[in-house]
Image (cartoon, rainbow, N blue to C red; front, side, top):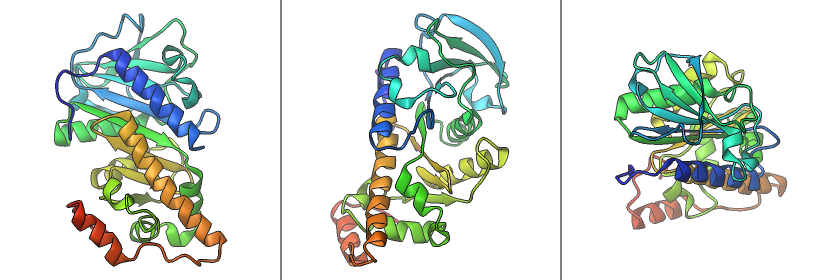
Length: 274
C-alpha cells in the first residue's frame, strides 16, 4: 500500500528513521556502527532548515529516475541506536541533480560523519530501480545484521531461497502473512562492492527482504521505515526459532505446510510458499 497525501514532513521522516534504528538495535541486529537506513522522498520537501550546510557529491551510479528528488541517508559509522536522540548528527540529506549523476548533500552543523554509509551504492541502486520500474513516491531501505539469520546463512544448506523459507516460515502463523513473498537469499559478496549492489537490486525486485549471505539483510518498504524493520524482525524471529531447534536437536515439528496454507487462506494471502 503506497503512501498518499498529505505526505510526511521532514521531522516525521527523521523520527521514523530514529524509531527504526532503535528497534534494529533492540533486536541486536546492529552492533556498533553496523547497519544503515535510507529514505527516498518523491515530493517537494524543505531540507535546508534542518540541514543548512551544502556540498556537491558525485553519485556512485547514475540515478536519472531520482532526478530532482530527495533522499535521507545515514552516515558511515553512525550507530543506528543513536539516530533517535540526534538525527541531525547521523543523517545526511540529498537532492539529486537533473542529470542524475551528482547531488547536493545537505548536512547539519552537528554532523558526526565524514561520508555517507559505505553501502550507499546499494541503497541508491535499489531506489533508482524501484522508482524507475514502479514509480513509487516513497521508499525506505534498511540494512541490518540480525544474528540468527546471518548465522543460518553460514550453513550451506540454508544458502538457498526455497530451503530458507521452508525453515523460517514454519514457526509462527504470522510469518506467512508478514512475509508472504518470502525472503530471498543472495550469495556472499564483498560489502559495498558492485557485485553486492547488482545482486541486491535484482533480489529486491522479487522480494521485499533479502539475506546477504554471511553478512546481513536488506529490506525495503513503500510505506515506512518501521515496516521495513518489521520484515527484518519477523524473518529474524523465524531464524531464531530455527536456531533453537538446531540446538535442541531438531525435535520441534513447527507448522506443517497444510497449517501454513490454512493461515494463508484465512487471510487471503497469495504466496509461493504455501
